[in-house]
Length: 416
Ligand SMILES: [Zn+2]
Ligand SMILES: [Zn+2]
Image (cartoon, rainbow, N blue to C red; front, side, top):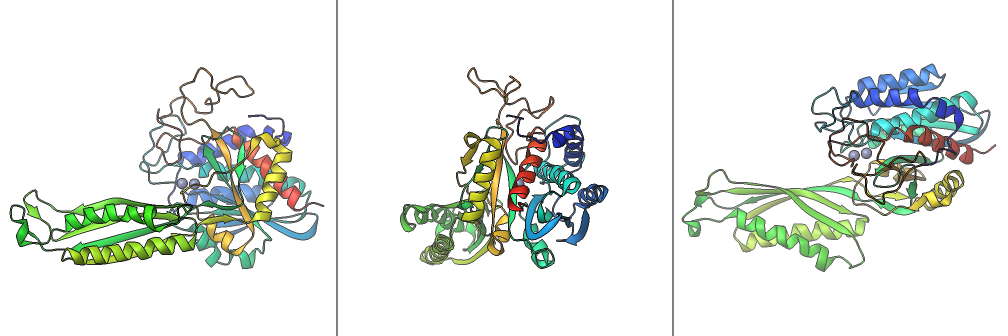
């Protein structure tokens, strides 16, 4: 990672930023329970003379920084919730709350935005208003939507909104962005099959729901291979099957649950409709009843073309175009999608560095000459430094860089 583009004033705060990030990491809080984290953010913003508005989406908050002149505005979003994961890392800033962990780097996202906030409030060298959106409950609980329902865009009328996620596996400090769909929609299904229970040795006297469940798991995969246009992407994963209590009993019921991912509503409609047809008709063919439930959770994250290009262009000037990549779409989901349904904007990623530590003979080196995996402090959990892994940790070297990227985007968007 090159440090030459980092604003010296933010770089000087690197130790303080690391302390904030590690403090948040040590005290992870789950969706809508992030009271301590929210208090910490509010206290920092107030310390830097930034107007703070609390209570959007329960624990969410917005900081407002006015520039010297101007009427344009920009929203910058950081999420701050943790995951229900038991951390394997043993270093001093490991989670002090068993079963909860910052395994997605939201501690880092929050601290990068705080780094920018401190700088922007001290200089106000831009024309317009910066809205700092600190969001709770990104992981499965739709904190973005909750903040919008509490009037985020009415109370803080931003022209566009931007968000960053750290990205393990991408070189530390490189960024990636793309126009159009980048994260998939996230949807859940639950299928309850009711057959007829009987003795495991006398299957002809009942209707076996496990046989039907097995048929459905197979049949669903034909939706991807035989119903979708070959150029369209979709995922159906049956991740939970529940049936039976005894080896000599064919149970009455079986339940299938899982996730469906797609980038467009048309593809999602096809998948949902075909899953429903297959469920009812295969069940009927075997003499069973079925209940089919499908819930659409996060919509796809679709970057707006002009704003994605703005990010690519601006960050190319800051980092050098060789450090700005085209983001490869992922079937992961992100509730930033709700913002992009109402506002122009773009979501992009910054590389967190290598996933594993074992130095390969030809592994890349950073500008300190050390292995690019050195960001992981001693005592990490030996697993990969991957999102949602119990051995993950955010790369602290990104804190001043991320703060700088936010400042540069603000200055370019709200140019005097
Ligand atoms: Zn996550
Ligand atoms: Zn995340």
